[in-house]
Length: 69
Image: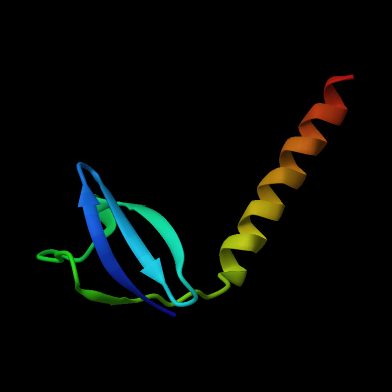
Protein backbone atom coordinates (compact mmCIF):
# COMPACT_ATOMS: atom_id res chain seq x y z
CA UNK A 1 0.00 0.00 0.00
CA UNK A 2 1.29 3.47 -0.82
CA UNK A 3 0.42 6.93 0.34
CA UNK A 4 1.61 10.48 -0.26
CA UNK A 5 2.25 12.96 2.53
CA UNK A 6 -0.33 15.60 1.66
CA UNK A 7 0.60 17.96 4.47
CA UNK A 8 1.92 18.10 8.00
CA UNK A 9 -0.13 19.93 10.60
CA UNK A 10 1.82 20.27 13.82
CA UNK A 11 2.41 16.76 15.13
CA UNK A 12 0.08 15.09 12.59
CA UNK A 13 0.84 14.05 9.01
CA UNK A 14 -2.08 13.82 6.61
CA UNK A 15 -1.47 10.93 4.20
CA UNK A 16 -3.44 10.49 0.99
CA UNK A 17 -3.90 6.82 0.13
CA UNK A 18 -4.93 5.40 -3.23
CA UNK A 19 -8.63 5.90 -3.86
CA UNK A 20 -8.55 9.39 -2.31
CA UNK A 21 -8.69 8.06 1.25
CA UNK A 22 -7.06 10.32 3.84
CA UNK A 23 -5.28 9.02 6.92
CA UNK A 24 -3.85 10.86 9.91
CA UNK A 25 -0.58 9.58 11.27
CA UNK A 26 1.44 10.99 14.15
CA UNK A 27 4.48 12.72 12.68
CA UNK A 28 6.77 10.73 14.98
CA UNK A 29 6.01 7.58 12.93
CA UNK A 30 7.26 9.11 9.68
CA UNK A 31 10.74 8.20 8.45
CA UNK A 32 13.37 10.75 9.43
CA UNK A 33 13.48 13.56 6.89
CA UNK A 34 10.04 12.84 5.38
CA UNK A 35 8.34 15.92 3.93
CA UNK A 36 5.17 16.86 2.07
CA UNK A 37 4.99 15.14 -1.30
CA UNK A 38 7.04 12.11 -0.25
CA UNK A 39 5.59 8.73 -1.22
CA UNK A 40 5.39 6.25 1.65
CA UNK A 41 5.11 2.47 1.37
CA UNK A 42 3.11 0.65 4.04
CA UNK A 43 3.31 -3.05 4.81
CA UNK A 44 0.59 -4.68 6.89
CA UNK A 45 1.13 -8.14 8.26
CA UNK A 46 -0.37 -10.42 10.86
CA UNK A 47 1.76 -11.05 13.94
CA UNK A 48 0.61 -14.55 14.93
CA UNK A 49 3.08 -14.80 17.81
CA UNK A 50 1.80 -11.56 19.39
CA UNK A 51 -1.76 -12.86 19.05
CA UNK A 52 -0.84 -16.09 20.86
CA UNK A 53 0.71 -14.09 23.70
CA UNK A 54 -2.39 -11.88 24.02
CA UNK A 55 -4.72 -14.88 24.08
CA UNK A 56 -2.56 -16.57 26.71
CA UNK A 57 -2.48 -13.45 28.88
CA UNK A 58 -6.26 -13.01 28.63
CA UNK A 59 -6.77 -16.69 29.51
CA UNK A 60 -4.58 -16.32 32.60
CA UNK A 61 -6.51 -13.24 33.72
CA UNK A 62 -9.82 -15.04 33.23
CA UNK A 63 -8.61 -17.97 35.36
CA UNK A 64 -7.54 -15.58 38.15
CA UNK A 65 -10.92 -13.86 38.07
CA UNK A 66 -12.79 -17.15 38.24
CA UNK A 67 -10.73 -18.26 41.26
CA UNK A 68 -11.63 -15.04 43.13
CA UNK A 69 -15.33 -15.92 43.30
